[in-house]
Image (cartoon, rainbow, N blue to C red; front, side, top):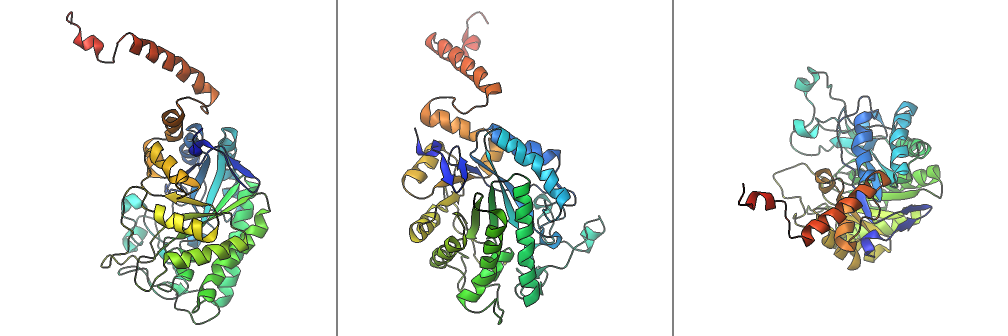
Length: 389
C-alpha cells in the first residue's frame, strides 16, 4: 500500500487517504447561500475518491466576502444549504471540510474571471455595489486598491465571535474539518504581517501583538467546535517581501497555533501585497511549496498539507515519503480531473479499490475486457489498420 492511500487520523476525524481538495472559490452563490452548483461541483470530488473535500473560502461576515458571489456562513439559512453538501460528501466517503475566511482589505472585488479587481462605480451600475473594506490599519493592499477602514480595538475583539459562530454553524451542518484562512493577505494574515499591520495598540507592533487576533480567533473556534472536529489553519509561509513574514516566523507561529488547538497547518504563500511593481511571489514550479511545508512540519511538529502544482501520483507519494507533507492538497488538478485520487490509486497500487459501487463493478469488468484485447494484440486503432478498409 502506498503512503498516499494510508488513512490520516486527526482528533476524531479519519480521512480515507492523504488527498485533499483545496478550497477554491467558485463565485456562484447568491446572498452567501450554496445551491445545486456547489452540491454537484463538490460532490464529484467525493465520488472521485478524495480523502478530504474542502469547501471554498466562506465568509464569516457579509463584509468579509471577496465578492458578492462568495459563500457565507453568518446565518442559519446558509448553514442549512451547506448541510446538503456535507451530507453528500460524507455519504460517499470523503471527510467534509470548510474553509472559513474574512477577506479584510482584499474584499469587495469582482469574480476572478471578471478580473478580480476592486469593485467600482461601474460595477455598481450592474448591481454589484462596492462596500467599505476593513483591516488592521488604513493601508491599501496595493496601488488602485481601496484604503481600508482601520478596525477599532472593540471591533477586533467583537469580530472574534463571528468566526466562532460560523464555525459552530459549520459543525451543525455536518462539517468535520474547519480550515481557518490565515493567508493570502486576508484579515487574519494582514494582522500578522508587519507589511499590513501598523497599529500601535495591543493588536500591533510586536510579534506577540500581531499574533494576538489570529490566536484569539483560533481559541474561540476551537472552543466552539468541540474536541472531535479537526482544525486546520492556512498560512502564507512567507510574504516574499523585504520586511515581511519569513518561513522562520511561520514556524514560530505554528508552534503557537498548536498550543491554541490547531491540528494541521495548510501551507501556502504570498498575497499580502497586490503591488505588481515588486516581486512578491514564490517561484512557481512543481510542488513549489514543499520546502516551506517541510520546514514548518520539522520546526513545529504539526502535520502539514502542501499545495501547488502537484499533478502526478508518484510525485505526491514522494512528497509524503520524503517528509515534505502529511496531506496532499490538490486544486486546479482536481478541476482538470475530479477522479484524480482513483487514477492515482490505479497508478500506485494497480487496482480499483475505493471506487463507489455504482461505478467500481463496471470498471472491473472494463479492465478485464481491455486485458483480453491486449492479449489478442488489439489496440484502439487496429480496425483502421485493416487492409479491408
